[in-house]
Length: 344
Image 1: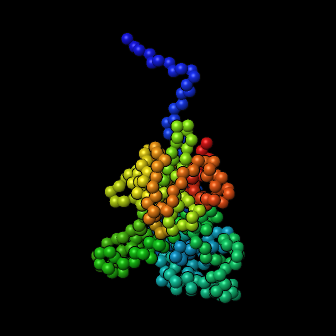
Image 2: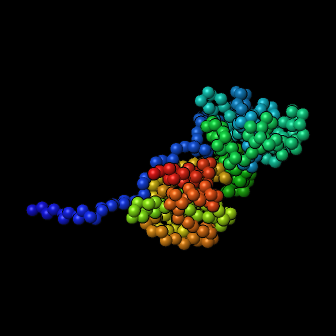
Image 3: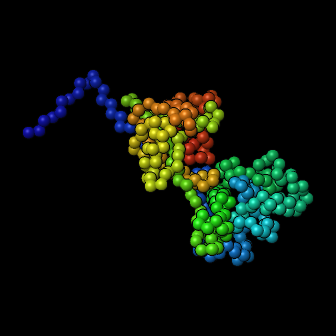
């Protein structure tokens, strides 16, 4: 015999809150945009790119994380102006078949290129270093860091920029074999460094890091996001919590561990929302949301100075009145945060 559950009194509202409203995946934007076929079959076996240069490939110049730009995009020039003895990397081709070679310059190489460009334009080389004040839209080539360019470059150029900055950082930091201590040399179109003694190959490094949108939903369905102020930042600057994935760890466990280490908040239901290259110097940011059943927290005070819960209205007001500086859309932190703000 079945037994029916007793009906609730009509005077008692029945409200069921199941947790945060799911967020949609983050669409590729800023540094996550893509417009290049990396064309790995054309890289060759060694570091000699003369055939690619002869085919009309265009250079993309990088120096310590900055890129040479002019007239609204990456600056290119004739291969004959490329300084010698620099690290050259085949970056791939665009949809029209145009090929690109990244040139990671050392200090001497940048000085040589600056001088050559200033001479060709009847300008003094020091002018290129201080540069006209128009930034990427300057009529003359100027050096600008990738972070300033991410939202100004098109899909093809942002792909090229991320490749050459990330690979340039790797080549500068891994010039010697970890096995023998001997100097390695670029092979496979600049995508590998080879030990001349034993032939061992060393590949570019990518460090995965999770970044987490932490949400608490109260009994009335009101959501709050937890933001942290890093101990090294100005007091009004806030962002999401993040940290590197450790060896032998899943992404989901990294989310739970990092949040607890930095905020002493136990989270559950990690949900992957998207990723973004962050070549500063070699990270891949993996965006997650996670739910916090409690509003209790305790900042670690070593990495995180303060933590604050915000409702959507509170955060919008704080940003509008200049009390909080939130991350911009150049980073996946800002993309996740504004996705939540708009997810009503």
